[in-house]
Image (cartoon, rainbow, N blue to C red; front, side, top):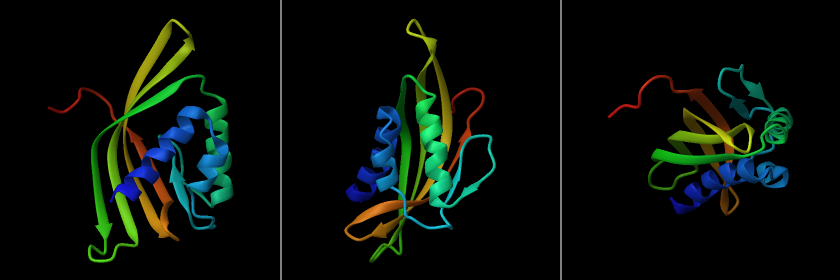
Length: 135
């Protein structure tokens, strides 16, 4: 499981540092890959997904993700080739100036598949969480 979590965390590292090459290395190269950004329609195909992340990363000055409620399910359990990772993203970003920050929360489901000796993203879906945090 640590390899899955390492790949999963690397995704957020890529966003936080604006590393397009790292982001590209984390996705399976296939027309059937899928990504849903919060409030948007699904994007299909690795090229479209990577373009969207490049635009997102270019438009963000500072962003940091604090992940909580991370749950990993490996399928099949005895010799997994698929991992489902569900987490809460607690997001801190600049609000247009050095003195101003804003926060947000989203729930995210990522599907990673075994790729050689590691794991790569096949699908990702994030949805904003509204209102008070559950106890």
